[in-house]
Image (tube, rainbow, N blue to C red; front, side, top):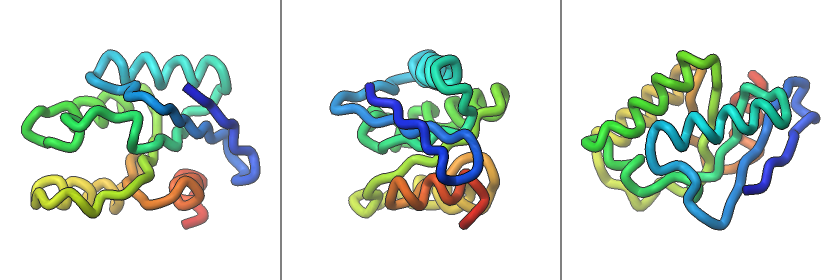
Length: 122
């Protein structure tokens, strides 16, 4: 796991990348968020889509909703960046749309866009 502290956006933001899947369920998501918070003091996370298991993007598993709820409970804001074009599920597209119109959880294309969303620039 690589953690990059993004300071140029005027707020504490940590970007997490990895070559392997890090988030497979709610406990692994909370563990990652708390580890990053401990190491960087950031509560705003830019997350590479590749660190999530594919079940996260199948809303019927409930993983995405549970993780989002836990992050909100622990005052963690997150933006996941990556390519979502291969997903055709209407419920997932609706979830992404609703998340992007909120203020705590975003799905965007690039790391820069994710940091901008979390910093309030976008």
